[in-house]
Length: 287
Image 1: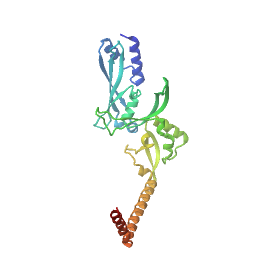
Image 2 (image 1 turned 135 degrees about the vertical axis):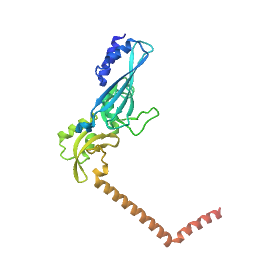
Image 3 (image 1 turned 90 degrees about the vertical axis):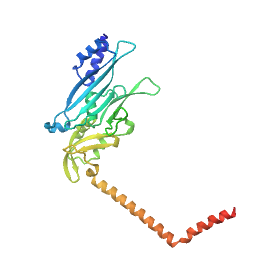
Image 4 (image 1 turned 180 degrees about the horizontal axis):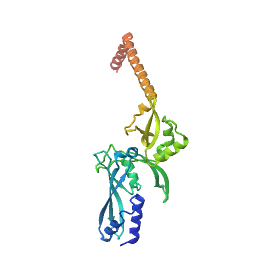
């Protein structure tokens, strides 16, 4: 048995959030020199909603970790792991396979947050062009849970700094009530780590307790009420929606007026159409 390789795999499991609970079965599988094997473990997580209402219960997450032995040596590698999330109160499980190399070594807790619909930010090392070095960047991750590919996976979207999503600016757009600079810093820390952040916000003309998550794709926030139902943006920004509708109505009225004016022009100046027809005929005749 390659003890150095075994020690590395144990450290990898600990980094990914599985602690030491799989160490014994990992060592047993490697000692049998299996060409490939899978280890499973179930972990419980408490959602933001369950923290407020413990009667909801915990979310159960099943992890299946896939190991393969090298064909050239006695070393084993953890290539990917499959995650199945069973949300408390939901009969439909959510499944995803995370490739450690491709998906930047997403941890167990981060996988749970992503499968719960949250976004998170983490450091990613990218290779520099024409160089062997690498550069560290802050990258936002979000699963598109509305779509599945041919393998049953949800696309994992990555938003690099070039996308220009500024969390601080996004928070400033929303009508939070009593949000201090210190409170904002705490909220940003929670959102960046993939948590839902509690806050108070003006929804319409009333102050309401809400939970928010970052939405880097639309450079804003997702806002939920106390029952974890999404609050539409037009409920939060009614004036902007009214202005938008007013602008659209004005454009429609202008368009209708233009059509009426154009129709009146044809009635008042019918000879212009006739003149165009005569010119066309004369050009053909003159050829």
